[in-house]
Length: 187
Image (cartoon, rainbow, N blue to C red; front, top):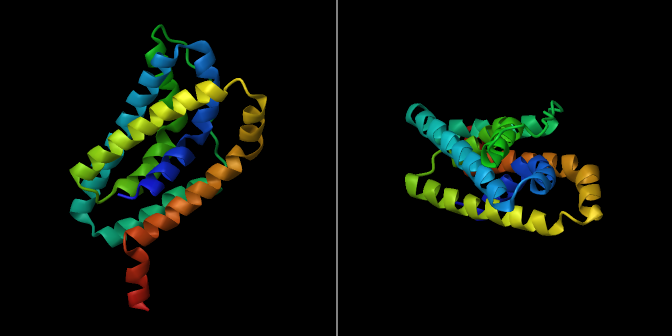
């Protein structure tokens, strides 16, 4: 498993949610935000992994490399979903529902091609790694949430940076799956 790609994937699919975290951390306790975000991340990673495992039963890995089209498509699709913070009695459930409503489609589309073909051990390492990144990001955003420059940069460049990351991830999936090598061999 390539931890740089995992980090880039995590950052790019959650970039819009990082902005939401600024609001969630002002409304809820840090521990409740971490728990809701962590539960949502684990749910989406697990779905991506198991869907990928089912696909690998029926298709060779190089064909599954075509799934790299999904993150590239998302980079050029301007169908942004805006979602406000949901009202719920449980802070953890409110964060979880907000995360799933904002990030479910992107996370599944991006993590599916990245996790396809990985064995269970690598998947579990990925869950631990992404879980640590989740906690680290919440703590970091909590620390910098008071800085106005952070909000300005996210608002001004966040969308373009996220799209660039999606494109890089898509091409990585093409390369890592063997799709490019297979297509070159056909030529």
